[in-house]
Length: 44
Image 1: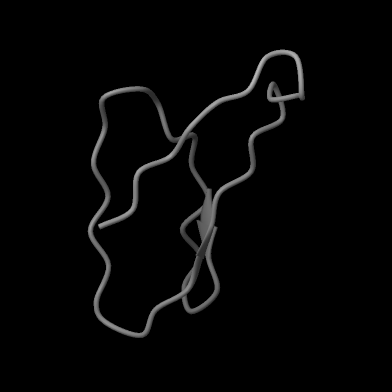
Image 2: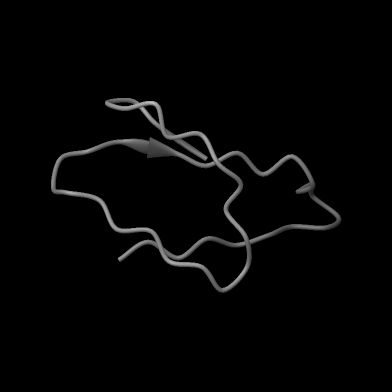
């Protein structure tokens, strides 16, 4: 997971929360996900 506006690059693990300020973009990569083994991410 990484944020465009800073040097935050860390693994995002199950059951963790991440809070951003409004209008900030975050990129979450799911390297283990595939069509046969999907994963989910909830964004509120």
